Image (cartoon, rainbow, N blue to C red):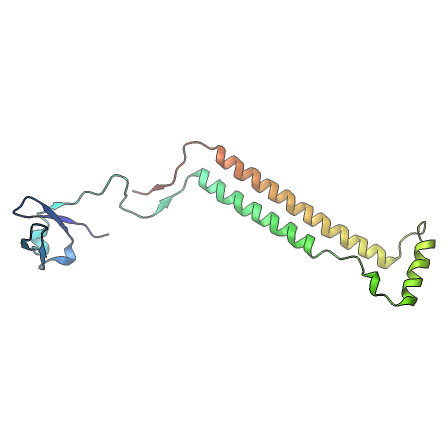
Amino acid sequence: MNPQFLLPCACGKTIPVEPVQAGNRIHCQCGAELQIPTLLAMRRLERVQDSPNKGTSDKLVWGPKQRLFVVGILISATGLAMATWFYATRPRKPDTTRLPPLLTLMLWESLKTGVGTPPTPAEQERIAILAGHYRWAVLGLVVAVIGAAVLAGSLCIRGSRVTRAD
């Protein structure tokens, strides 16, 4: 940000000018036309003071409260995305309404006699895949809860505010 200087007018008002305006003419609110001095002469003018709430730099400085808040949001979002993904991609139950009559009869016969029999290797593999998907979905929910706890913990920290660097 360029420094600004106060150019006095005969009416008593001062007009803020920047070094890039050196040598130009400017009009005061009273109607008088003023000549802006050269860069060398401009250094002798009074400088505009920065307002107390505005720093010389636009860089934000975050405290631990803001960092934990962002980390909590990221952890929660990751956990929820993970849980959603594994739940949405889990194997579905087969649609038996579209089976041909012969396969429907075979399925019915296996259900009548198969209640006490151990599952076939294909059924065991499907059960293992389904259990794995549910475990990963639950793990994603646990990660989301941990992220929510970090987020809630960040709200309990006192006295940290976003400030501008000097």
